[in-house]
Length: 451
Length: 187
Image (tube, rainbow over all chains, first blue to last red; front, side, top):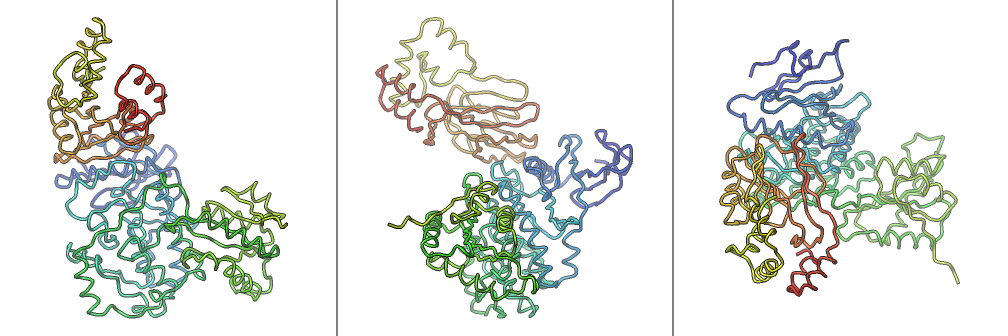
């Protein structure tokens, strides 16, 4: 195929300036009668050798972008050409900064890592809930728009759980980016959204330390190291990394996908609420794994078998977060107990569900927003006291004292941003308004009548 | 419209692999048929080619043998014999979509009802559209699929029907109880 040049016309699209010329594809701006359009055309390079795999990857990208609902988290597909004669994709041009602009400057402060990671986790959540798994997450495939939103690009190696995976049969080596690839991908598992969370962890690791968790493997042998080894803890490399951030990163990088976060929205949540992260020994550790541990791991890795992937989202509908709104002034043990009983009824045995305990208080005017006032702490304590009898593991619970003069609005904002499945709240003066305005189900709970 | 193995059995052909109930059923059907029905069934082709699509009841490899396409190996044999971009077949009751790379490796895919699947030109495809009745997956709904030729995609569907009435008719006709139960239970 002739290398396309600016000015050329393809299916009545006129090529503008070249944005990117890579080994797999070239990307051009498109020009209209009045100058540039906010569109780009991606033209795969179909050389002789890798033709088959490249064409299939091109088809996969087209299919998946076509199946995704329009969103700022990935480019919108506008048109595509015939794969046999004129293969191209015309997509929205995403003006943004690639994540590698930040990885080059790493190590970065925790707040910046958290901000970038939070936006990326939300983008992943958006595709995961549509049963798409990116599987090729790397710094050059993430763009940040001016408003901070992360946009995922290049779905050529991705998998859609309700569409045939055309790629698996085409490759004989693990498919994806070897720097960020999850252990299960190495052994050919392509159906687990938690693989993207591993890659997210690898990117956060690099942002926080300036190092890659497993370097840049050049052989399958080197790649397989992560089947049995955890990376060196970030705090062993950069002592200033906060324990909460290390906790999040290492939880994403767990070898067994069942031990990682189970959904991207949970990672986003923790990155946005560092104070809520329950830090374990994993988060504090500065120790490199001992020789004995390394050897034991290597022996164990011979039998590495990935955990089974979770069922697709649109088969298993419950979204992970349930909010229990606990009014600051309507205290009373009978109501608390009724709320607990209602929460218990909703907890599934597989603990995928997460309970967010919320109370809204008027903002403290005299102190900076994030400084817990005495009142704030008192509220947190009472939220914890409410949740304790539920006997849930720490990672299934979060506590939030929202500061706002408009309690209903604050609660509804939280519900919208965190994609809450259901709100449980006591029958108080605001209940009707929450019921009317919330985007999710709302259950109004009353204590049993006395007498 | 195509001839299937039960049509052939009703015509009195020697059909391999029919179980006892199916044989009873074929004999019953045969008694109901008039001459014009025979003529009609005899006129049905074993396969139909339409552009680069082939329609066949069982495997396209040797249609009159009624071979079941139960895995990637049989699917590959059927696709190779068909010399078509897409083979549409039945015989097996579960909805299934197979695709074969240029290297000749076939892969099975279980379609999600209602989700359109693009049929790319880089692979050959074999779609088992599923059956009305006895769907084997404990879902009594009937199965069908629609091919969108303009957009090159197939969508598989499941649709409810009055299987209880159908089961009652089977019982009233004095046919084996198991046949009625299979409709009701989707097995």
